Image (cartoon, rainbow over all chains, first blue to last red; front, side, top):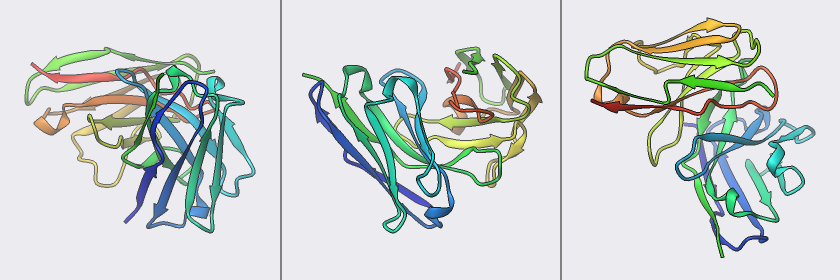
Length: 120
Length: 107
């Protein structure tokens, strides 16, 4: 059974840092693109970042470029999101999601999410 | 960036109703369109990829159609478990933007 479990969320002050983790199981993690998607309170889903199977290609949403870093450890079946210079508007539930290998790139499995609150 | 516009943003419907949600892309995305269902406190669920391909395990009351810039998601007979927010997402190019969502509520 495919499972994605996020952790690392919490309350942080503006300008602070946080590192999110996503533990993957039930599939060959190293064979899939992965990404982070967030949902701010009362808002819709927003793509944040994606990473290729070997970590050699990464993409970011414009508002997080230069502040967030997506990475992965295929030996540990883990996905990460290092978030620096956090802003109030980064407050959201952050989901990790697998990108399917069919060529259509649907996000076919999601974790339950971890809440990040940026507030003074 | 390719912008995705859903309509309506919300709708009220009764059990058994047929519901249609529309998604429009700001430029052609061929059939690179995915639909998700999201319930509060739950993980989003992928319903349809490639505009019309139902994911394994998704009931056939859900269907998708369209190509190019205009797409629809149809729920043939609304049931209690279908009340949720539905999102389209293009997977043609990065950034893979989502529509703003359509909240389906009970009338």
